[in-house]
Length: 401
Image (cartoon, rainbow, N blue to C red; front, side):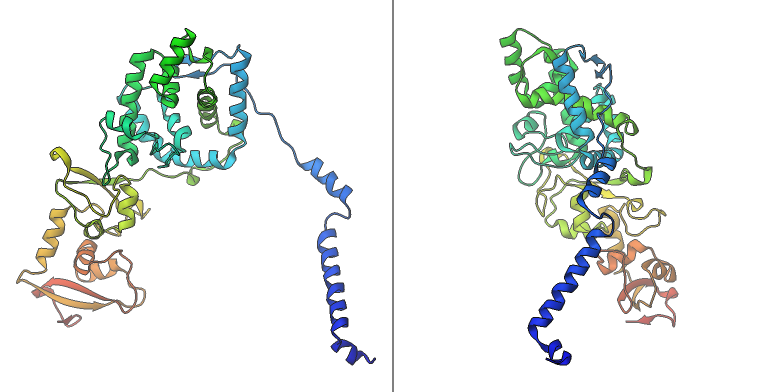
């Protein structure tokens, strides 16, 4: 068989492909290690796991942990090891704590609660609005009945457990009540996990009022040691192998509060009037559970958080009217109908921004957003923007309607 015919033979083609694949595999697999023994040698040489440093003394909320008790010591050691090597979760804890700890610390201090209690929010939810299998909600994982007892509004439209600030105040109410019951901050933290009634039963049954001496269920037995481990790691990150820069952490988000004492039938429309998207309205106000809000209860207005421009622009340049309140929105809309103003149209040019247009017509970005019912401040070439200008300002550069 001639070679030209051989090349067309399907069996020969399969043979060539197999040979080529073998060459590729051999090259890729032997490019670094020639055999398994060399691979294993490199593995044993480079793969290392270290035991975690263990402190001699530990305190929670000023209360000493009995490290001389081997059982306590080993429970704490377990949680230090587990949380040190749960790197992905711990890194996220550092990132989120930079945003939320400053506000939580202020509230805890004002309410007379030890600063260490901020770590409860870390081990409860990872500083996120999570929902447990038992129905506990939010950063502080508050059950519905408990939340109602603490004075929170919890219904289909509004659930204040999702509000990180309001839920922190609610948690403080619980801590103070539990402290009056047990007289120990460690016991207060333990009761937050198993409930005051449950802890009270164990105290009565075992005749002991000290957490570290009580025989408790596995979850509560691990609760305080885990709290101690998280505190230890977050207070000394480098010691436990965590390295990051300030730029890696999430910054606190500045907001402006808009008080609303009436029902809001459509939150999408409301968001547009505030110059933000519906998404950001919900992100900054997770306690809103529907697409509308009924009239506030007992005449108490809703405190709606509107993100400040700095949240979206590090240069502090106004990108949208994030600090707007409803009366000002209405004033802007009214301006458009006044006799001294005329409506003109401007077609966006290549590379032109909404700030450029606002400067051209001597109006504000917020005016353009409201007049054009824009969902964002991004504009594109060819887009028509309506502008309301005073009659003397109109000139040949603009096309009157």
